[in-house]
Image (cartoon, rainbow, N blue to C red; front, side, top):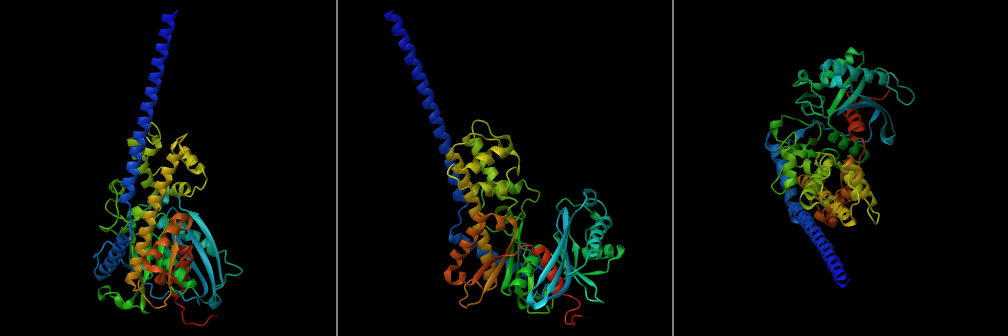
Length: 495
């Protein structure tokens, strides 16, 4: 009996030792995994760092590239496109004007009744979806469809929307595809994007195509202004505030436009602006500098994109890509540090499966146990039972990515102010930047960091003269306002 008892005790002791060893090994393994995860996090944070000195180098580089892009055609990664908008809205515009906003698989038509100096603005809008077969068909079919919808909308004019007798309707056309603009109301298509493929249109004047389609529909309307959404945002901002001198889009993509002094535009452009200023469409998404804090994740994202080597700035600050950067970091953490367990969630290997709105929701989670993060990880990645420290790590990654994007956006804006001579001014001149886009509007951690960085870079004195204002629907009402400010009836008395 004594031998049996001793044997049993020995077996129990051995079992206990084995279990203890397994627990120790498990803890050591978990500790090793977490150490690896923290090392990846620290490395990423260091590579994304945006100290004030680096931000000023980015701002200086932006100003230099702006000068180079204006000085010669192709002299910079920034296209610095002449918009031919040399007469921005004053706030005194009056009359009925239309806008057509074509920038993807759907388009929008607006009519705007402007009330003059009282700035009484009335507007109505209609949206339509372009059938898929028209996106790859002929140009006549596409523009006939658009013109037919426009004619249908025009036919419903009534009430507060009145066209003075004897006048032709005028239209501002927002066309958000690559165009080589040749005047305010003309421009040739360089290429289709966003799923469109109509080869016969390449090199053709898009305004001419629309005008012919309107004529086929029996619609008597003149296209007065051809613009992109950033220029439209600037115009809309200027209508509300005479001190708006630049506009920035921070949404799925990103771009900026600003007001340049006419004498700063070299003669090679062959322009004679009617006023002392001209709006420049920077196309700043293509900005690139050795001072940009790029990581291996950014470089691999670029290499695997549809346009490698292009739009580098856009790929680190815009809504299209922030969530994808987060996905790539999380994938590495899952593979090398088993962040979500021994099996890598399959969805995590799918490009763009984690979108920026999801990243924003996790970043804004203020619950003590980060319930939103837990829910999103389960919903998007199928990950359950995540620890609180894992969820905290995810939030920290969101913070690093958004902080870098916001601070670089601010530095680029300072670059524009530097080009305009408004970054160190001691005069009490007021400077207003009009902002539009879902990233800026809905991602408050991003927008607040951007505005805070502007103050940090400029200092309290100069920053007190700079205002960032949200200007919604620039691509719509802005186009109508530009049609008004460049109307063929300017200077004539209202009927």
